[in-house]
Length: 104
Image (cartoon, rainbow, N blue to C red; front, side, top):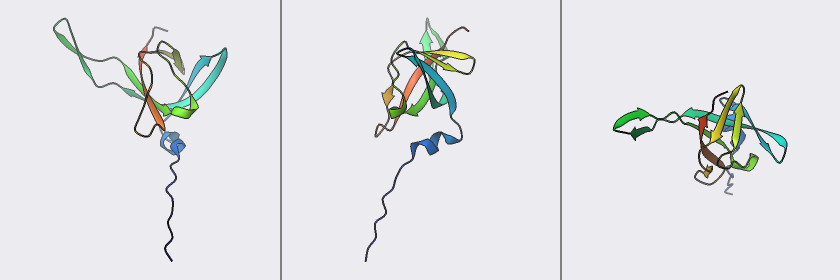
């Protein structure tokens, strides 16, 4: 008798230890969600000068929130703006979005 065990992925476990609390306002309602926040390690060339990007990247569960370009995202007392539409990663369970911090 051969027994197969299905692998069930729990995306919440990936976020459990290191995720931060974020909010957006959508349709007049505050929507909370959790996401991982990372510095973008890309370098950009501008006017012959190479500098490290000041963007941030968030990774979040796709089904929990819809993020669109230009939308404001809050994390604690910090405010960010989405630089481009969120993109699904791999199988689409998680998405990634680039943010720029705005002046508070």
